[in-house]
Length: 180
Image (cartoon, rainbow, N blue to C red; front, side, top):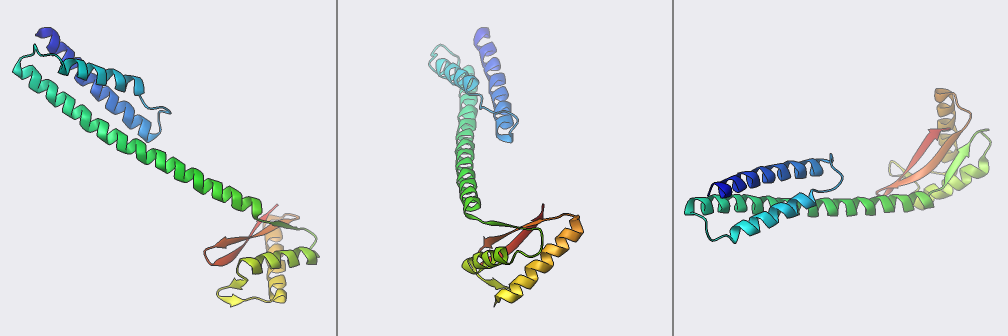
C-alpha cells in the first residue's frame, strides 16, 4: 500500500513536470516537445490502472490523476495542431512573399538621367494599378514624382543612389524606395 501511495505521488510530480515542459515548449523556450517523459507517464498510468489490488481510496486518487493527465493530453494535442498549422501557414505566406520578390523589378537611380529606367518603372506601375489616390497618373507626372523623391532621399541620407520598386497592396500599387 505504501509503495502504491509513493508511486502515485511520484506520478503526480511527473505530470506536473511534464506540464511545465510542455508550457516551455509552446512558449518557445524548448525546441522539441517532451515526448519521452510523456510516453513514460502514459505507460505508468496504464500500468497502474491495470492494477486490481488497490484500495478504493487509491483507485479514486489514481482515477483523478489519470483524468488530469488525459485533460492535459487533450490540451497539448490541440496546441500541437495549432502550432503545426501556424507553421505551415507561415511557410506558405513566406513562400508567396519570396515568389513575389523574385518577380519584382528593382530600379537603381544614381545620376538622375535614367529616363529608360523611369519608363520601365512606369510600365511596372501601370501593370500593377497605375493610380495614386484613385487617380490615373501620366508618365510626365510619374517622372517628376520619382525624380523628386529620389533627390529627396539622396539629400536626406547623403547617398549617391536610390533603389525604387513597385509593390502591389490590395488594388493599389505602392512606390517604394530605399537609399543605397
